Length: 170
Image (cartoon, rainbow, N blue to C red; front, side, top):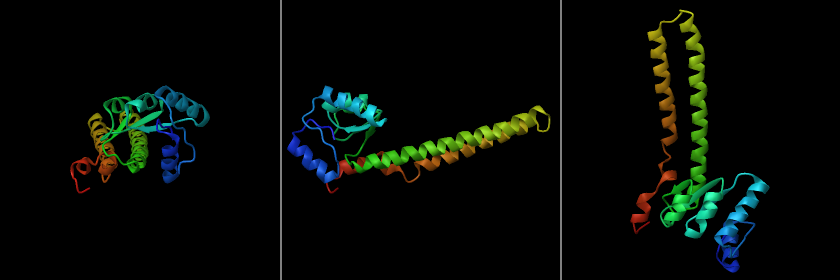
Protein backbone atom coordinates (compact mmCIF):
# COMPACT_ATOMS: atom_id res chain seq x y z
CA UNK A 1 0.00 0.00 0.00
CA UNK A 2 1.36 3.37 -1.05
CA UNK A 3 -0.12 6.29 0.86
CA UNK A 4 0.52 9.83 1.88
CA UNK A 5 -1.09 9.15 5.26
CA UNK A 6 1.01 8.72 8.39
CA UNK A 7 2.50 5.32 9.13
CA UNK A 8 0.28 4.48 12.12
CA UNK A 9 -2.95 4.97 10.17
CA UNK A 10 -1.55 3.22 7.10
CA UNK A 11 -0.47 0.15 9.08
CA UNK A 12 -3.88 -0.11 10.75
CA UNK A 13 -5.71 0.08 7.42
CA UNK A 14 -3.29 -2.37 5.79
CA UNK A 15 -3.77 -4.90 8.60
CA UNK A 16 -7.55 -4.60 8.29
CA UNK A 17 -7.31 -5.24 4.53
CA UNK A 18 -4.70 -8.00 4.77
CA UNK A 19 -1.99 -5.99 3.00
CA UNK A 20 1.57 -7.10 3.80
CA UNK A 21 3.68 -4.18 2.61
CA UNK A 22 3.02 -0.55 3.54
CA UNK A 23 4.81 2.60 2.43
CA UNK A 24 3.41 5.65 4.21
CA UNK A 25 4.03 9.38 4.17
CA UNK A 26 4.75 9.36 0.43
CA UNK A 27 4.63 12.42 -1.77
CA UNK A 28 3.24 12.05 -5.33
CA UNK A 29 6.70 11.73 -6.94
CA UNK A 30 7.64 9.07 -4.37
CA UNK A 31 4.52 7.09 -5.26
CA UNK A 32 5.54 7.22 -8.93
CA UNK A 33 9.03 5.98 -8.05
CA UNK A 34 7.49 3.17 -5.99
CA UNK A 35 5.20 2.18 -8.88
CA UNK A 36 8.17 2.03 -11.25
CA UNK A 37 10.12 -0.05 -8.72
CA UNK A 38 7.18 -2.46 -8.34
CA UNK A 39 6.88 -2.76 -12.12
CA UNK A 40 10.55 -3.72 -12.38
CA UNK A 41 10.12 -6.26 -9.60
CA UNK A 42 6.70 -7.77 -10.45
CA UNK A 43 5.75 -6.66 -13.97
CA UNK A 44 2.30 -5.15 -14.38
CA UNK A 45 1.06 -2.90 -11.58
CA UNK A 46 -2.50 -1.77 -10.89
CA UNK A 47 -2.90 1.38 -8.79
CA UNK A 48 -6.16 2.39 -7.11
CA UNK A 49 -6.54 5.95 -5.90
CA UNK A 50 -8.92 8.83 -5.47
CA UNK A 51 -6.98 12.02 -4.86
CA UNK A 52 -4.90 14.63 -6.61
CA UNK A 53 -1.81 13.14 -4.96
CA UNK A 54 -2.64 9.75 -6.52
CA UNK A 55 -2.95 11.07 -10.08
CA UNK A 56 0.76 10.76 -11.03
CA UNK A 57 0.92 7.18 -9.71
CA UNK A 58 -2.34 6.31 -11.51
CA UNK A 59 -0.85 7.61 -14.76
CA UNK A 60 2.47 5.80 -14.21
CA UNK A 61 0.92 2.41 -13.45
CA UNK A 62 0.19 -0.25 -16.03
CA UNK A 63 -3.46 0.31 -15.15
CA UNK A 64 -4.82 3.09 -12.97
CA UNK A 65 -8.22 2.82 -11.30
CA UNK A 66 -9.85 5.93 -9.86
CA UNK A 67 -12.56 5.70 -7.25
CA UNK A 68 -15.02 7.88 -9.15
CA UNK A 69 -17.57 9.10 -6.61
CA UNK A 70 -15.15 10.56 -4.09
CA UNK A 71 -12.28 10.83 -6.54
CA UNK A 72 -10.77 14.09 -7.62
CA UNK A 73 -11.05 15.18 -11.23
CA UNK A 74 -7.28 14.83 -11.57
CA UNK A 75 -7.36 11.19 -10.42
CA UNK A 76 -10.26 10.35 -12.71
CA UNK A 77 -8.53 12.01 -15.66
CA UNK A 78 -5.20 10.25 -15.02
CA UNK A 79 -6.71 6.80 -14.51
CA UNK A 80 -7.45 4.24 -17.18
CA UNK A 81 -10.66 3.20 -15.40
CA UNK A 82 -12.99 5.18 -13.17
CA UNK A 83 -15.28 3.22 -10.88
CA UNK A 84 -18.55 4.94 -10.14
CA UNK A 85 -18.82 3.40 -6.69
CA UNK A 86 -16.42 3.92 -3.80
CA UNK A 87 -16.15 0.23 -3.00
CA UNK A 88 -12.81 -1.57 -3.33
CA UNK A 89 -14.69 -4.82 -4.06
CA UNK A 90 -15.65 -3.23 -7.39
CA UNK A 91 -11.98 -3.39 -8.43
CA UNK A 92 -12.12 -7.19 -8.33
CA UNK A 93 -15.43 -7.19 -10.19
CA UNK A 94 -13.97 -4.90 -12.86
CA UNK A 95 -10.97 -7.22 -13.27
CA UNK A 96 -13.26 -10.25 -13.67
CA UNK A 97 -15.36 -8.34 -16.19
CA UNK A 98 -12.23 -7.35 -18.14
CA UNK A 99 -11.02 -10.96 -18.26
CA UNK A 100 -14.43 -12.10 -19.47
CA UNK A 101 -14.45 -9.41 -22.17
CA UNK A 102 -10.99 -10.51 -23.32
CA UNK A 103 -12.11 -14.16 -23.54
CA UNK A 104 -15.24 -13.28 -25.50
CA UNK A 105 -13.25 -11.03 -27.85
CA UNK A 106 -10.80 -13.86 -28.54
CA UNK A 107 -13.70 -16.24 -29.22
CA UNK A 108 -15.19 -13.75 -31.68
CA UNK A 109 -11.89 -13.29 -33.51
CA UNK A 110 -11.29 -17.04 -33.84
CA UNK A 111 -14.87 -17.59 -35.00
CA UNK A 112 -14.70 -14.79 -37.59
CA UNK A 113 -11.36 -15.94 -38.98
CA UNK A 114 -12.61 -19.54 -39.18
CA UNK A 115 -15.73 -18.49 -41.10
CA UNK A 116 -13.65 -16.42 -43.51
CA UNK A 117 -11.05 -19.19 -43.89
CA UNK A 118 -13.79 -21.58 -45.01
CA UNK A 119 -16.00 -19.25 -47.01
CA UNK A 120 -13.41 -17.36 -49.10
CA UNK A 121 -11.73 -20.42 -50.69
CA UNK A 122 -15.14 -21.99 -51.40
CA UNK A 123 -16.37 -18.78 -53.03
CA UNK A 124 -13.17 -18.35 -55.06
CA UNK A 125 -13.45 -21.97 -56.24
CA UNK A 126 -16.96 -21.25 -57.43
CA UNK A 127 -18.56 -23.72 -55.02
CA UNK A 128 -20.55 -20.98 -53.29
CA UNK A 129 -22.18 -17.93 -54.75
CA UNK A 130 -20.92 -14.52 -53.67
CA UNK A 131 -24.40 -13.67 -52.36
CA UNK A 132 -24.48 -16.77 -50.15
CA UNK A 133 -20.96 -16.08 -48.90
CA UNK A 134 -21.89 -12.50 -47.99
CA UNK A 135 -25.06 -13.71 -46.26
CA UNK A 136 -23.13 -16.26 -44.17
CA UNK A 137 -20.51 -13.64 -43.31
CA UNK A 138 -23.18 -11.18 -42.16
CA UNK A 139 -24.86 -13.91 -40.09
CA UNK A 140 -21.51 -14.72 -38.48
CA UNK A 141 -21.08 -11.05 -37.55
CA UNK A 142 -24.48 -11.08 -35.86
CA UNK A 143 -23.42 -14.17 -33.90
CA UNK A 144 -20.24 -12.40 -32.84
CA UNK A 145 -22.25 -9.38 -31.66
CA UNK A 146 -24.65 -11.66 -29.75
CA UNK A 147 -21.67 -13.41 -28.16
CA UNK A 148 -20.23 -10.03 -27.16
CA UNK A 149 -23.47 -9.04 -25.48
CA UNK A 150 -22.89 -11.86 -23.00
CA UNK A 151 -20.25 -9.68 -21.34
CA UNK A 152 -22.76 -6.98 -20.44
CA UNK A 153 -25.39 -9.35 -19.08
CA UNK A 154 -25.50 -9.37 -15.27
CA UNK A 155 -22.36 -7.24 -15.00
CA UNK A 156 -23.81 -3.78 -14.51
CA UNK A 157 -22.87 -3.72 -10.80
CA UNK A 158 -19.18 -3.95 -11.71
CA UNK A 159 -19.44 -0.87 -13.87
CA UNK A 160 -21.54 1.48 -11.77
CA UNK A 161 -23.65 1.73 -8.66
CA UNK A 162 -24.79 5.27 -9.27
CA UNK A 163 -27.95 4.76 -7.19
CA UNK A 164 -25.93 3.92 -4.09
CA UNK A 165 -24.39 7.37 -3.86
CA UNK A 166 -27.72 9.20 -4.04
CA UNK A 167 -29.72 6.98 -1.71
CA UNK A 168 -29.04 7.96 1.94
CA UNK A 169 -30.32 4.55 3.11
CA UNK A 170 -27.46 2.70 1.39
